[in-house]
Length: 176
Image 1: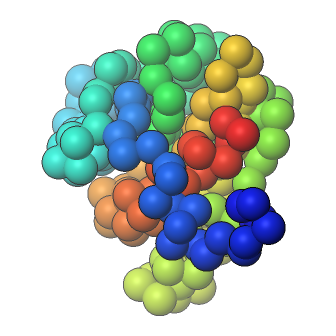
Image 2: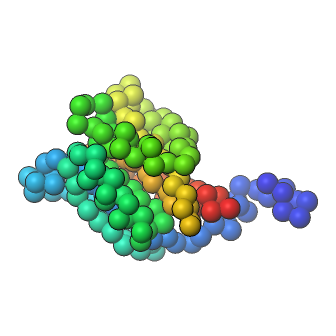
Image 3: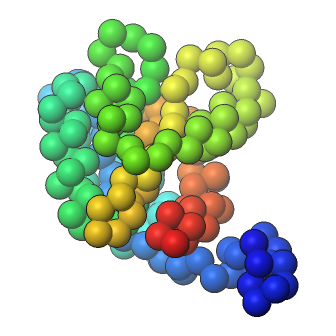
């Protein structure tokens, strides 16, 4: 990218990115929404991103139901710069997070899912193909980012490595 005729490095680009953001976490899980399972993944995301200096402004646990997922994301987008969903990204009949949210995306950046699956492959081997993790930009008055992560705590830890490194940079570009 040119800046006054001078090519900017990746590091210079990142240096101009926001230093913190407001985020929302939405856990999509039938069992957690019924109180039958603790939401370890959602709590982990909140704690890790708060450690980085970011502000948690919304949290919800919803069942694997399309309208409840969409409603929670829309509520979260009113307050947050970045929304992270966890759960519902596999291939079972009830895994509908991607189908519910993909139509809201103005742009999907599949690179996030590709990198996530690559890192997952290093950890779990070919089982990484079972994840449909993705991310997208929703443009309104201001562009917002939505990351759709698997529900397992190990998968969330892997995804957060990527998010903590790149979310600021992604947000900067989405808002240009």
